[in-house]
Image (cartoon, rainbow, N blue to C red; front, side):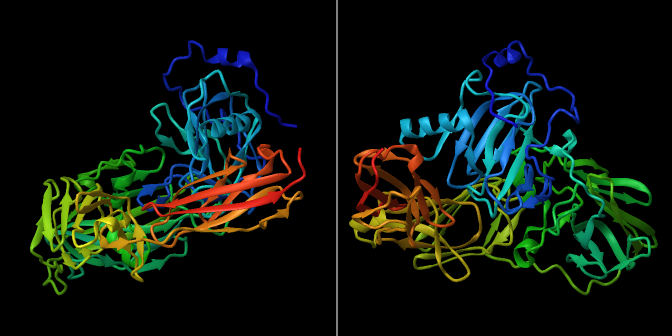
Length: 566
């Protein structure tokens, strides 16, 4: 049986250890779960505004599966958040690598005891800790936690990462984490991109979807395209591993032009500093309108991505009149399964029937310059290099609503929106916020601040925004107890908290004046207190819960319950 075993002298293994990164040893790390590994997401997968930094391992639709340390090490970081990774654990290993475990249900043994101690000491559920290296050592096979669904997880699973000594995520499969896979990658679609005013594909200056014909050997051949000038290609593709019906991301794409290697992307490693450049790597506008991500097989300006592991002429090809060529792209998964697409190209400069449609507006923005733009009550500050390329922006204001272009081009940096709120009564101004409107016109809170009569917010996405007032306090509802009732059989206290305006900001709960840790599940709008914390020792108990929304409206809930005393 695997148990948590903490041996104090284990820390000596780290003394004098160099920080130099050792060569990857495929058998160094064992599996963190004692079940067959099936993925719901793989390394490098394309996600909203980022590349996926680890493996999402299915936990058989259950929470609470034991997680084991895959190698010797020590706990160097613990972070608990209501969002993101939820309950996360970081273990440093002697070889310089760090393993990360996210969306946990709870920690195990001494780690869990340490976390609870710090939560009560700091009187908070959310926290970030950096224990001394000698405090929480672990050995390979020790129980370190239990799988869960905390944070922004969409279902029970373990998010598992391996990071190098520069904190760059690496593909765990490089280290021997074995995922059975005998299936070829799946090609969704292939596209051709004319680049520049003198380029065209099939008499179009716009993106062109190519018709693919399946061959007997499982490869594809595109219908011959007629092109001229500078051309790039892109594709949508996915991969499936054995035992799973869901589609995951791909591992490698290699392109050739007339047999010569042209471009290659490989998902082995990247840095968090570059991950948002995913929005430059994909066709962002196509994704926003079609919910499918085209990976562009060429490097445009302002794309520093290190996943591009080879490029000749930035992945573009030049097509001249009377020239015939073959462009091929090969999609390969980590196990070496391949799918190949061949694209015959004929060079001919034909009359353009479908010119590029550019909507000109009064606001043309150069990507490398900063701009301050005023529209009605609103002012917009766009820092330099917020955009990846020069473009026209369609910005219009009507009353308290700003149409801040359409969300079909990406923003790389935060843009500041400011609105004059002098027409609101001074006592109401601290209840105002700038909210992003969804397709139904419902506003979602952006962190907003008041200075004088002006409300400002930093945003990182185009779309419609509005000044919104929220004067309604959060609602609080007990779920598994009633006022003045006995609940000796309860293992937990569960309370629903909701706020349909600016959203929940903070909460604090006490029983008989003593702070209690209540875990917030924002997906279910529920707070949970576990009686195993042993704060409740009396028969009569007075619960007091204060919930505050993002603009300061608060609700105080009080109830008395009875429980068999300890």
